[in-house]
Length: 234
Image (cartoon, rainbow, N blue to C red; front, side):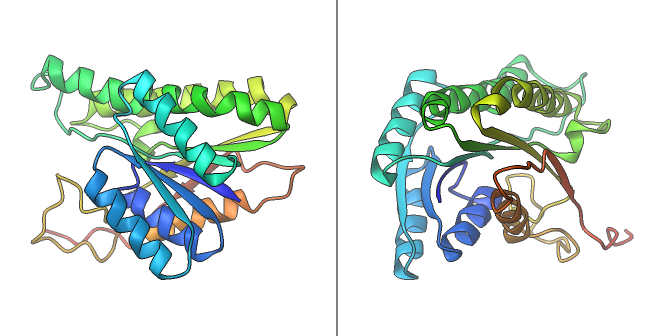
C-alpha cells in the first residue's frame, strides 16, 4: 500500500509513518522541514522500508498540490492519504490573536482540504482509496481554554462525515481518528512533566494501520484512541 502522511516531520505523523513503513507500506512524507523529512526517510530506508519526501506548506494550495503530485509519482500511485498535520494553540477567546486564529484555520482546515482535493482525482479514477483525517478528542467534546482549536477540529469532523457520503460510491473510504492525550513532544510539551501515561505517536500509528487493513467492503469511519491511565495528580 502507498500512503502519503502529512505533518510527518515530528510527533504523531512521524509515529504513523514509522509504523506503516515497518509493516511493509511505502510512505510519502510531507511537511515543511526538509531536514526533518530527509532524516526520517533515511531512517526508514535504513530499516528496509520505502520512503519518499516532499517539503511543502500545507497552507498553500499550489504548494500542496505540487508536493502530492511528486509523492504520487515517486510512489507509483497513491492508495491512502493521512491528513495529520495540525497546529495547536491553547488560548481562550479573550487571549487568542487574529494571527493565532488564522494560523490554525489555515493549517487545520484549509490544509486538510487542499491535500484531500489533490488526491481525490487519482483515487476516483482508480476506483479505490482511503482518507484518514486525524482530528482530536477536541473535535467531539468542548475544550475550555482552546475554543479556536476545538472549532478547527469540529470542522475536520464535519468535513470528514460529509465527505464520506460524497466519495463512498467511488470506492473511497473516509475515516476520522480522535486521539486523546498524546506524548507528541509538541511546542506546548512540558519536558519536565510525566508523559508516560499518554498515548504514544506509534500507538496512533497502529490504530491507523488497523484502519487501513480493513477489507474493501467495509470502513471504520470513526475511531477514538485514549490513554487507559489517568493523568497523574498534581
